[in-house]
Each structure stands twice: as structure tokens, then as C-alpha cells.
Image (cartoon, rainbow, N blue to C red; front, side, top):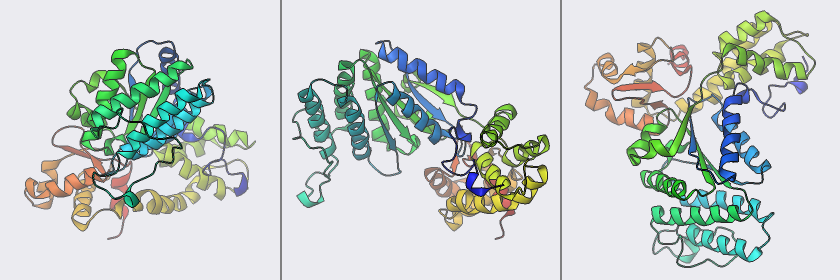
Length: 397
């Protein structure tokens, strides 16, 4: 098959595999947009799931939906140990520019930009020299006395309220999308929850759509006890067999090509229904197929190449971030689960390694911080990356 036409290549096709089977989530966000635009109360949204289920791509789709409805929209990717103020300022700057196109009062837009600039300038530490201060690239003078106290919780409430009012002027709203939300600092998580709470109280048209690993709800709950009432939690999981087949068939048929039922069986077995893997094995099978249609033999021939690519880009890049002690912990988890995507008791890991549980806490906590494992409940630990245990057991030490 012509590799130039490969519909599974990154960026190819009109609807990537990561969005197959997500009609429910897309439809639910349509309802959110409509309710908020009409001034009706609606909770913000939090998407949770393992790596490779398509959360980031889904966030991109939701952002596009908001923009098409005339909303202001901005996206943030949270990073460990990084403050929220700076990337949030850039995201809201983008959202305000979206709204400015429709707003009839330039002075009003500039006033909000001035407040945003004041908020952004507080990203510099107190006493920082002028040359070390970050300049946000907002071409208006910074305002004074609003969203510039230096207290992120106070400032975020004021900023969100003002930006939401700007959207209200033009009869739309603002969508703030935050990827890797579990990586936000505790103070930033707390401020975000407080701001969402305030917005829900006054019915302001601003919604936060967060995405993160399965333990994100626990992170939010630990920050603010009322967070469970602020967000609607949606678990994004692997695709059903029907949706997984659709994720393969749709791009193949767009290229006027075919694939046998046996090949679909083989792709599902290899991918486990995870969208990222469907794309990886689908791409390799397309390239390996000498003729139309793609067969089970093509999938079998292509699998080692897909495995090798995943071993470097998807699994290996994460494994390389772990220290020797952390790799020992990960290997133990893989051995205890026989390479399956299952959780394990932390006490079992300690027994398996012949160590005291307390001596393994630093390695476990660091792996959680690096996003390699997560703890859905006390005493349990699991990989954030599907098939990671299988990768570890197949890896030569």
C-alpha cells in the first residue's frame, strides 16, 4: 500500500482514531456550551484516563467546538513544578483575542487585557530584577488593583470573573482547557477550584475542561473538599470492539482501500483497543501490506516494527526518565502482574523486593510525580501507560 496515502500517519485523515467512540463526550460538551451560553448553571468538566486513550486529542476537538460557537478558548499544558500563572495568562490572552473579534467596544477589551497583563506580571518573584521579569506580550498598560495581589486564589477568581463578563458581553463564553491537570501545584489546584466555585455561584460563562490521569479526582478532592460538586468527571477508556473497528475502517475506507475481518481481529488483539496503539499498528500494517486489502498476515509482519517504534517513542521515553531504584520498582510491578494492565498492592511490591514498604516510598512517590504510575486508592499502585508491564518483561536488561 502507498505509504504516502497512509491514513494512520500522524495528522492524516479528518477524524483521527483517538476520537472514534467519543461521540458521547462530544455530545455532552455541546450541551455544556449551550447551557452556559443561555446563562444556565453547568459544572466544569474533567476527563480522566490512562496514557494513550486520546485525552489530548479530545481536548483539541472540544476547543474547536467552542471556537466554532464563537467562544473564547485557550489551552494549557500543566508541567510538574511549574506555576500556573504564566501559561494560564497565554491561554486567556488567546481566548480574549477570540472574543475581541466579536466585541464592539475596543476600550472594554483593552481594559480586560490590562487586568490580564497585571495578573501575568505577578509570575515574576518578588524583588526580581527588570531583566529577569517575564513580559507577556500584551500591548496595553497593566491595570492596577485587580487580579494583581500576588495571591493566586484571589487573583484567579477576579481574573476569571472579568474574562467571563467580557464573553457575556457578546453572548458567548470562555473555555479553558488544561491538559495533564494532575501536574498543577497544590496552590494552583486550590485556586482553580476556588475560582470554579465562585463562577458557579454567579453563573458566569466560563468553563474549565481538565484532562489527566486516573488519580486526578483524588488530587482535586484533596485540595478542596467541595471539588466533587464543581466538576463532572468523565472516564476515558479503551475503545469497545465496535468502536475500535470503526477507528480502523473509517480511515481505510476514505482511501478506497479494504481490510479483512481477520486483520481487524489481529489489530484489536495487538492494540487492546487503545487508540494510540490502534494508530501505531494500523500505520505499520498499511505500510507492510503489498496489496489491497490489508490481511492478518500483513498485521503479523508489521507488528514487530510497530512494537519497536512504541518501545522507543511511547514506552522507552518514559522508562528512561526513571532512576535505577524506580526501574526496580517498575520491574517488580510488571512481574507481580505478569505484564497485565492491573493494579498491585504496594505491600506486595515490598515483599517481592525483600524490602520494607517505608524504604520504597521515595521511589513510588517519585514515579507518581513523573506520571509513570498512579494510586487510585490507598495501598494500590498501577501503571499509567497501557501495556507497560508487558514492555518491561520483554525488555532485555
